[in-house]
Length: 98
Image (tube, rainbow, N blue to C red; front, top):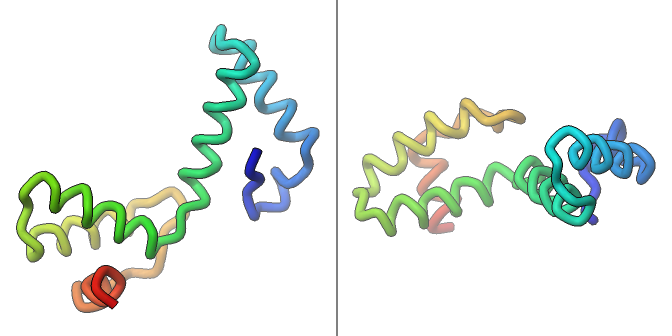
């Protein structure tokens, strides 16, 4: 089980309590609840740079053009749960292509 960098959830007991709560409140088995919690923590731990690369690849597979992709990623990054700094379109291109 990965733990987030946030010290409020770094205690294994907190994670166990969270997984037990998810299992009780959703009717999932404990192993399913653990997998859900792990997936959510992994999602929230994604760096802004990894998010930009992942979204670029996903939108490229859908046939979107780069100018559309860059603008969309800039909007999406600003709305993240743990928002990254505002990236210019040039910065987005640099993250993707180096």
